[in-house]
Each structure stands twice: as structure tokens, then as C-alpha cells.
Image (cartoon, rainbow, N blue to C red; front, side):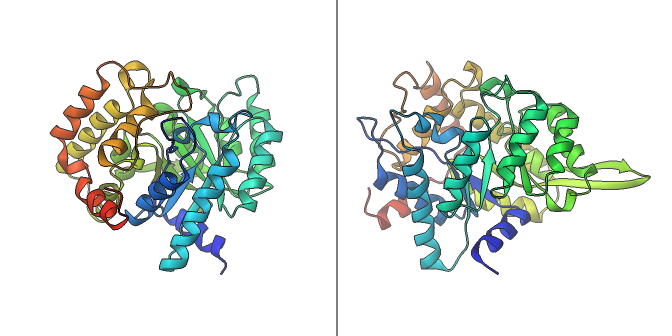
Length: 350
């Protein structure tokens, strides 16, 4: 079995996959050393995979005047390869791809060349394409390498898709997983039902991207009736921006959820995580401070030097820092500050 086959087996079993942020210096230039450190943190925190060049990595890395897409993909891939060589572990490497068919296919080819195992195909910014054209775009990318479908929430550039759309996506042979992140129960059910009803249901792994409902997604078994028989489907893992903070606690909780039954304590914890996510992602302000909020947690821990984004206008919303103070004080059991402190000591970064 080659490395990619092992990685795809891990993806199929379900794992923790943080959607990584972008490390910049005070001049908003790429900070390779800090990006490698951040990648190493996710790996040592117990992540089974890493996704980069996605929303939390900032789509502007693709802008011609910035031209960081290739650099970020290579940096993250190289750091993962080094970790794999040191530990003997296999880590799922996922690259985000965007744009219309030609761009998405080109980005997938680059990801394949750099050793990525699968691509997360973003639907963002393509409101002018029909659902049929979107399906054919996914089919074209899947001809290059394994695809993770993506239901992106409409409030940050996604769109609402029909149930039929997800039926067609599930029918594409090289679609190996779907990240479901519409932040909407009704739309989430469309994806789960389409996957459960598909002849390929055993070949497609569902990953929650619903940062507002992470734990409940992972605890729920969905049941549907097909041809007089009950078919079941679950979310087996998560691919989340929220999981790029406090990641060591995330991996511990993920293992706990897999082993123990649903309880009132877990449901309480689910609500606490949703509260924390609402603050970090700045839900009250239409997610305007989402990426800076992630950066602020990592900055406070010492994993990032600042909260700089490629767009100078992208910063914390008024009152967001105070709300971050609140959730850190209110939910210390969600944080992994002690783990990060020891991690940074080992890398002499304190």
C-alpha cells in the first residue's frame, strides 16, 4: 500500500483536520518559519490531516500580485513530509481549490504534484454557473485526483444547492468525502440524505464543517428508509476552521466522542463550543472578524506573532477582543494553553 492509499484510508475512517491559517509578519509578508511551526503544532497536537489553501488560509493567496498559493502548499506539504519521516505516521494532506473549471483543475494538478492526497473543491464565487456546470466542474477535478465536495455557507460566499445536486456529486466515482458546512440544519440534512441514499454511500465519508454545531453533528446517527430498508449515515470526522485553535483539546474530545454515548454533559459541552465559535468567528457581525479571531487566539498562545491578514481592512470587530476574553475565562477546559506552552518550549519560541 502506498502513502496516498494509507492517507485515504485515514480520511475514510474519519479524523481531525484543521483548516490552517496563514502566517504573516508585521509587513504582511509570508512568514515561512512561523507557518512551519504552526503546521508542526497541528501535527503534534494529534491531527490526522491538515487542510491548507482554504478559506482560513485566505483566498487572496491566489491573487497574481501576492502569488502565495504555490508557496503555501509547498511549505505545508514539506513540513508534513518531515513529520512523517520522523514519526512513521501518515497524515492526510488536503489542498483547497477554487475558481472555474480551468483554474480548479490547474490547482488540483499542482496539489497532486506537491504530494497532496485530496482536494477540497470550493463552490465560492461561482454564482453565475448552473448546478449542472458545477457538477461537471467537480467531475473534471475528480479526473485529476480524489475530491472532497464542499457545501459552503451562503453568508461567506457559498450558495444553496438542491438535493439533486448532491445526488449527482455523490455519483462521481472519485468523490471520496464531503465537507458539509452550510451552517443550516435543513441544508445539512440534504447532504446526509443524498449520501445515505447513494449506491456509493460506503465510499463517501462525511465531514462536518458546521462550526456552529460540531459536536452534535459528530454524535448524531442519521436514519432514512430506502426500498423498505433503513440506511444510516454519520459524520465520521471534521474539517474545520474552528479546529485550528485549541487543537490538542479537539483531538482528545474527538476520541472521547467516538467512544462514549450521547450524554447531557456532552450536549452542554456542545453548546459551550458553539458559544466559543460564535465569538472567534464573529458570527454577530456576519463573520467579518472570522480569520482575525482565529489569529487572535493563536497570537495569545504565542503560535502567531500577530493577527495580520493580507487585507489590511480585515481585523477584529469592535468588542470581539473582549468577547474572546470572556470565552477564554468562561471555558478554560476548551483551551490547550498548557500543551502549547510546552510545545513552544521544545521549539525555543517562548
